[in-house]
Image (tube, rainbow, N blue to C red; front, side, top):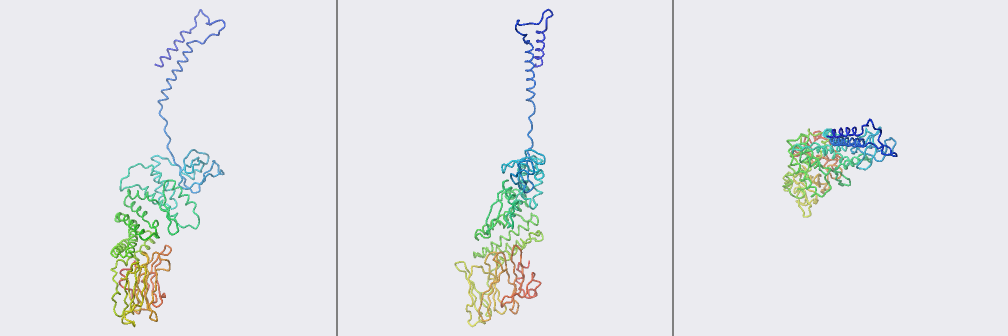
Length: 543
């Protein structure tokens, strides 16, 4: 239709303005120039209209321009300078850290033009200090692969967390319970390692570490600070761990529980009631796992964690004089420790095993019947009795041997303490001139009380601790006396500055002077010949 109108207009113009052979040019008047022919004006107008009609619909029919693929720029180095212009000597407007996210806005020779939304500053960075990734399906797979690669890399926690969070935001597949998303497991592990590094005592300021913490916080990770013993401890809020526990497979759930229940985020200085609640909560989480479905290393770690909590609850129940519960808890603690496959633990976890073993050793006496073997002693031996006081103290009374002392049954020593005595551990020397007893001032620390008669006949109380340090994690056990009553054999274990110190010692009974010692009982002749049989069968120090 448009073409027909154009041709009709062209033909019409030619006919009206064809020159007549007998006529000259037409003038409107003697004083007016010739006018533009009307057909020419019509031709021009119709041509313009045709062009508009032809081009207009065609322009509207063009497909819309596609949106470009979004990208993200990740800083991969520490102490990256964000410069105000693309020059090496340009002023630095901000210092970026590993894991920071930037928006790419262009390129300049040797520089990338970016914008930092966290600090609200534009600038330029070197291409070698950042990585640019597309935020599409292929980019999501690439981000996930990099995040899982960085999961176990020490010092790359902030960078790996940024990659994992980006990949998780682009991950739109529905998760099946029990299969989980390895990204949650990776986020939980990396943020916990970063928090652990930040909680250590450093001799010099760690500026890079502080910047990495800020980079992770900017991505939505929340750290909970806690002041424990005058030191600030950082712990994660547990969001990633909770998702891994809810949706992950058996091994991912176990790792999440181990992170949630780690001792670093507990408070050993809290009141005993609060500590007891925390250990009970730990056991509830740990009890939801099935160790036989886990990898050997994870199963060993789970049993160690359970043994630690049961040992504490045993000591706490004994302090509350709830002996049945104390006995059950101590039995559970020993059972979990014996179920640990120590060979499955890596080298860095051996220290944890030793510490838990010492805790169980300090609590194992609670599983005994607590019958006092010296309550009705023979006439040749002193008599030891215990009395519980209303204020929480326990008083012990030592009476003279009826066949040896001038006053038969006379009280030769009386002592009261808030420490928990273990009556079943009371032993008397062959000559009846010394009595040894294990007591627990705290649920994780035992001491050996030695009641002995001096040269002038007076009885005195001496304390032998597991180590010459403040009470912490330590245990001491009585291995027996030598037949001549001249020496006493003890096994001492304690955690000193994060390391296990274990000694098997033979000491003189008259002044507790060290006679011989070794790091293994079999290296001492006295232990090989005179150690008590019940100690050999029950001692945790011989593990």
